[in-house]
Length: 350
Ligand SMILES: [Zn+2]
Image 1: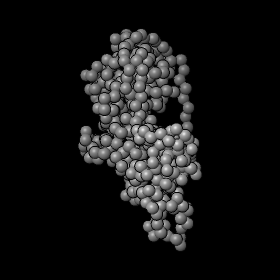
Image 2: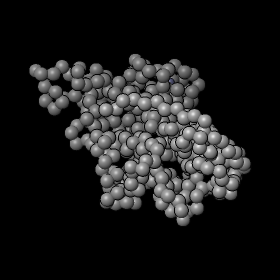
Image 3: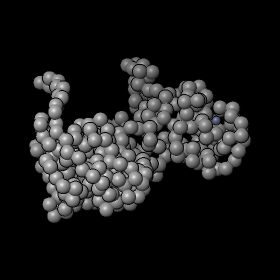
Image 4: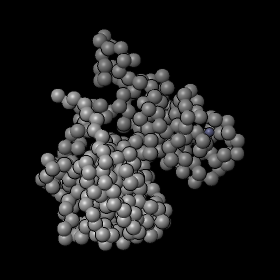
């Protein structure tokens, strides 16, 4: 039985099928003349799900007399597709379910698609997202600053980063803002000696914070009404290799983490929390060491040879850019603007 690249949404699997280099017709979506792979050849890859999802067992996950297993477990297909979105929309449903069954049968001849499963991660030993975050940030602040003890975290985050690269074309335009009137020579990144710490940069290491939208740039400054702002227009001197940080799950393949899905999901929830923290405005209530976790993420990105990264602004409508080396941009011109009006929306929080 053959399945094809169109059967999947997962990029790792699509690449694997393309590299397999066999063209035939697909036994699942019935597409002709497509790159295919033998279902059995995907068994090794899908084996990562075996320790991650446990078959529902009486006495271990539920008690017959007390629980209805349907309330506790789910079909393996539903669990996998919901969490990882592996199968393409074209075959989602019964066809994808049959394909998964055939793959699982080649791993275990007793597999049945009618069996119910639970996520092993819901067992007691699994740390919640909050615990993962607390332990990680505590370790960076008060334990090991540069080499956290869980070595797989850095390795797995790097895998996520590589999946999310984004090219900023040469001559792309973006802006940086400062409150007050400034000449163009003072509109680049602050000198290293006076660089104050931010969510991305530690004290003494200066990065260029920018945005492709003027409005986002202004919002990020959190200006007061009638403030005068200098905006500098900049262009990329060359193509810039960025990482696009996002909290979405669709871009993450479960197959890219060296086989340990429990470590992978732990890293994934930490990564999502790091990206969320990165987009929060710098607050006077935070002390310098509160920024260590996001600075760590930024350092990992730089160490992988990227020129910078982008993430959604929490204050403006667009993205924020962090550029590690300002020599990669030209400062073109400055304009001055005045804040006419600031809009607030509030909600009652206590
Ligand atoms: Zn197909």
